[in-house]
Amino acid sequence: MKLSKCFLICLFNLFFVNLVSSQDQLTLEQAIDIGLKNNYDISIVKNNAAIASNNNSLGNAGMLPKIDLQASTGIANNATKQEFSSGLTVDKSGVQSNNINAGVYLTWTLFDGFKMFASHKRLQELESMGMLSSKILIENTLSKIIVTYYDIVRQKQLIIGLSENISISEVRLKIAETKLNIGSGSKLDVLQAKVDKSAQTSNLYRQTTTLSDLKLNLNQLLARNSDVEFEVSEIIPVEFQLKYEELKIEVQKNNTDLLFAQRNIELSNQLLKETKSQLFPKLNFNANYLFARSENQAGFTLLNQNLGINLGLTASWNIFNGFNTNNQIKNSHLQIENADYEYKIAKLQVEQALLSNFRKYQDDQKILALEEENAKLAKEAVDIALERFRIGSSNSLELKEIQRSYDEALTRLSDARYNAKVSETQLMKLNGKLIK
Image 1: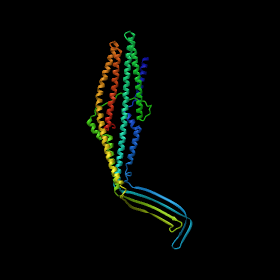
Image 2: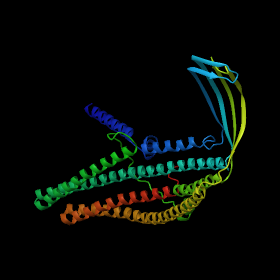
Image 3: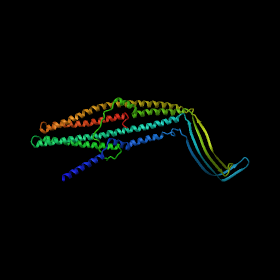
Image 4: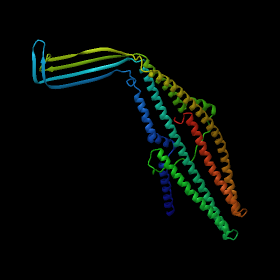
C-alpha cells in the first residue's frame, strides 16, 4: 500500500513538473512572434512606415483642388463728416455701420510643369523606402533574436556538458575514496578529485550566470519583463542546403539594403523632375462664391449687397530668379550621382559579405562534422579511462587529462553548432528571406 502511494506521488510530481515545464517552454517561432508584436524599435519603424504611407496621397502631391470657407463681420461707430459737390453737407456723430462677408474659395493647379506628377512618384518612393526601412530593422531585430535564442541553447548545452563532467568527477572521487579505504590508492588522488570537482562546479555556476544574462537580453528584445522565466529548445537545428550561386542570384533580387539603395536613386530622379518644373509656367483655376453686405447710417451709400460666383484663371512664369533654379538642377544631378555611388558601395559590401559568410558557412559545416566525431571519441575515451582507473591500470592524472579533453570537446561541439547556425542566419538575412 505504501509503495503504491509513493508511486502515485512520484507520478503526480513528474506530471506536474512536465506540465510547468511545457508552459514555460519558449520556441524560436514564439520568440519571433512576440518580438514582432512587442519590440519597441519595430513598433517605431512600423509607425514611420505608416506615416510615409499616409503622406502618399494625391492631395499631398498637389493634384487636388483647395477649398476654403471664409466669413467675417464687423460693427463700427464713427463720427462722419461729408461735403458733396452739390453743396450737401453731412455731419453726424455716433454713425453705425455693419459689414458681413462670407465666401467659398476654390484654387486648383491645372499645370505646374509636371511637378505634381513627380511629387506623387516621389511620395510613392518614400512609402516604398519606409517599408524597406521597416523590413531592414525587422531583419536586424529577428537576427538578434535568433542569435540570442540559440546562444541560450548553446549555454544550456554547455551546462549539460559541465553537469555530465561533474557526474564523472563524482564517480572518480568515489573510486579514489574506495581505493584509499582498501589500501590500493592514495590520498592525493582523493584530494585532486575533490579539487577538480569543485573547479567544475564553480564553472557551472559561472555558466548559469551567463545563461541568466542571455535570458535577460532576450526578454529585452521581446519587450518583456526581465523576470519572465522560460525554457528553450534542447538542440540547435542546422540545415546545410544553401548554395552560393543560388544565393548570389537571390541577393541581387531580394537584399533589402540593395533595394533601398535602388529606391533612393529613383527618389533622386523624382526630386530632379520637381526642380525642373520651375522652368515651366504655372496655371491655376480660381473660383469663388461670395456674399457681401454693408450698411451705413450716413454717407453716399446706405446699403451695399453683393451675391454671386466668380471664375478665373491665373498664369505665372518665373523668368529669372538669380540662376537659383539652374543651381538646384545641377545639385539634383549631383545627388543622383551620389545615390548611384551609394548603390554601388552597397552592392560591393553585400557581395563581399555574401562571399565571406558563405565561406564561413562552408567551414562551419566541416568543423561541426569534425566536432561531432571528436565528441563521440572523447566520450569513449573517458569511459575507457574511468574503467582503467577503477581497476588500477591508470592514475588520476591520466583520467583528469582525458576528462579535460572531453570537456573541451563538448564545448567545441556546442560552439560549432552555434556558429553554424549564426552563419546560416546571416546568409538568410543577406538574401532577404529571414522574414517569411
